[in-house]
Length: 205
Image (cartoon, rainbow, N blue to C red; front, side, top):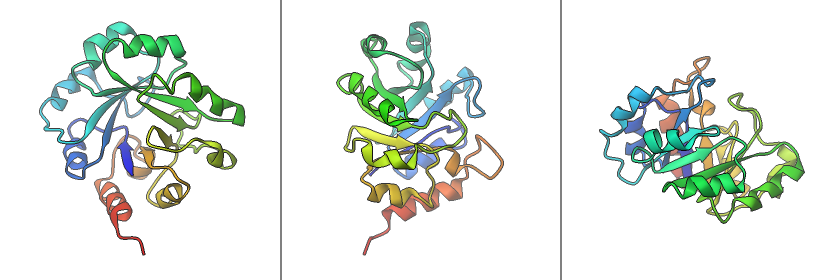
């Protein structure tokens, strides 16, 4: 199973996640988010040996200028959380960066929109519509979501429920607030991260 841990701090959290072989390390560029990082912190990311991890820039309706100046060369993927249409995603892809396209799911009719991006995006991530409020995709829709290496799930995932999502067939999961210290948005709890990795790696009987 592949993991993405999002909302990381470029100084505090990165080396731990690399050491734990977390596949995708997410950094938020969204001013309304408590997890938003400063452009000055980008220089810190260049200091790491990523090994097999990939850096992901999480954004909302990014401009070409932003992508060219801040993202390309610093990140392996850009995660698109806005209302980008198929043509816009093509345009961003042609700038020369891999794409994770987030699809917001509130009702069953929302699911089909992934078909617009499945041939363009490198990964599709199904998420709730809450934007930073740690809500899950509606329970009754989980079985309707496509599964496989190209598809992932985000939204209120933590160490208590992650194995259940694995059992439902999801093998790419995105976590953020579920790994934070209580009442401290944007501050990852390293013990929670370690416990999560241990839990998913422990032998199953």
